[in-house]
Length: 280
Ligand SMILES: [Zn+2]
Image 1 (cartoon, rainbow, N blue to C red):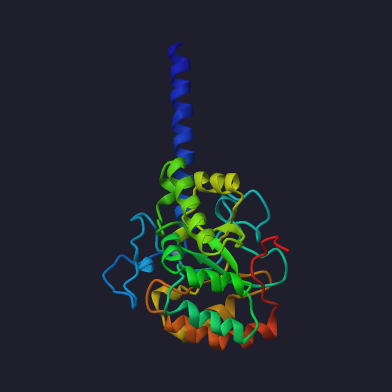
Image 2 (cartoon, rainbow, N blue to C red):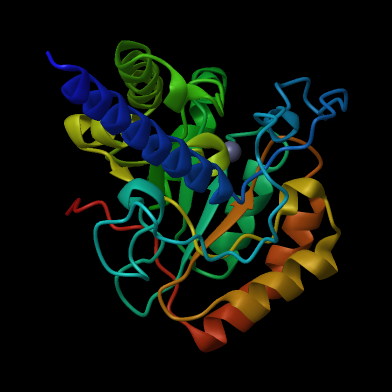
């Protein structure tokens, strides 16, 4: 190979590396579900405190606009977020999603409120919690809510691991859900921290899981108080919104109180639906 060809090859490699680095930086900047560094707060149940799981140190402090951009998205601006993950329901209906459970203290309270208002939602469950709380998985499924895989132990860095590790994690989580509720239809995966990567997205495709992101994020895991959670959801929810809240990972009393106030308001403005699974 001539010196010119070598230089050209080197230049191409540098350009590609630069593109990859910017894409990675962009991906990190699209991560609104950040987690505080302090992992010392105990939960009410002694269960792992996912919401306090530290993030990668390179996550910038961007405002929670609830509207992740679509830098890597192949389709419409309101349908897809990072790596094509869904950020809209695809209709005017609104989906409420509850992450990190099931939790024996908070999940029953969320289920009771949803039942009181006749609302079906989507629960993004952590595999080890599904294994330890099979009755709650059964309740979620039996009450007509949609189940979403949220990884085995809320690994925000799962997307950086090998494809084999990612695949095994998602399958182990599906297995725990199905062990509890064999008729559960698991149609979605939500990456912890919203830290999507191309390998995670491609393994989702391989396993028939739709990557599920969100469009409204009140950061309830930071326990800002029910008024802030309520105001954020109330102000930011529009037709097709996917609202992110948490039924585990710390003190979720603020989320429960906010939900109680929000449900009548949201029902007056929107139809609420669980993310569709295609199940009959
Ligand atoms: Zn989570």
